[in-house]
Image 1 (cartoon, one colour):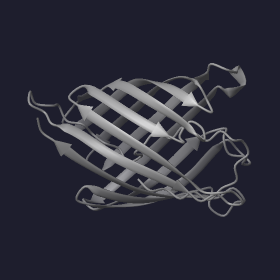
Image 2 (spheres, helix red, strand yellow; image 1 turned 90 degrees about the horizontal axis):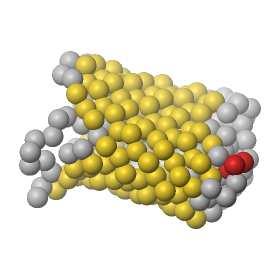
Image 3 (cartoon, rainbow, N blue to C red; image 1 turned 180 degrees about the vertical axis):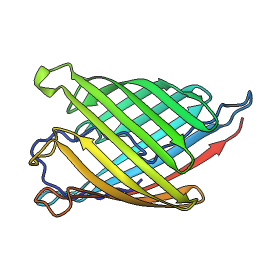
Image 4 (cartoon, rainbow, N blue to C red; image 1 turned 30 degrees about the horizontal axis):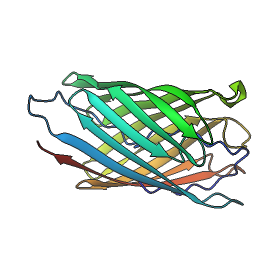
Length: 216
């Protein structure tokens, strides 16, 4: 996904923001399930600061979830993740992926996290969160959460509300609330997020992402 964010940074550290935000419900995999891949590039435009890019790559096969990020937990910092996919339900669809990551670069540490979602008809509630244990300084520890409620009335269109909990941006509050509008065409998605609209800490995030599958 390609993201552009307008906000003020109070620290070098940027928030952990599991990607993609658009909830993914993984159905039970058949015996010969393909590999599912997604590529995301988040580009940030920050008020009064230089912009930067944040790429993310994911790969899923049956229960296995793999993920790699850069400029995610911090600037000039990479992270590699492994997790286990659980999903069940028909009318109510549940999906949970507990995972753990190694963080290296400007920040070094270990980060347990979880991505979860619950879908019913056109509604999906999803939660991405993680806690980074900085192995060089306890002051570098932080928690990030991104709960989101999505309404998808059409196959190609969705909207909803979102909250992020972070300590990375110097805002009036470490909890930012906002809304989003998204569009999908085949395997490509584009979403615009607006946090704290009308305030001095308004953030705008534009996301562009693509996904594809590959059989054995």
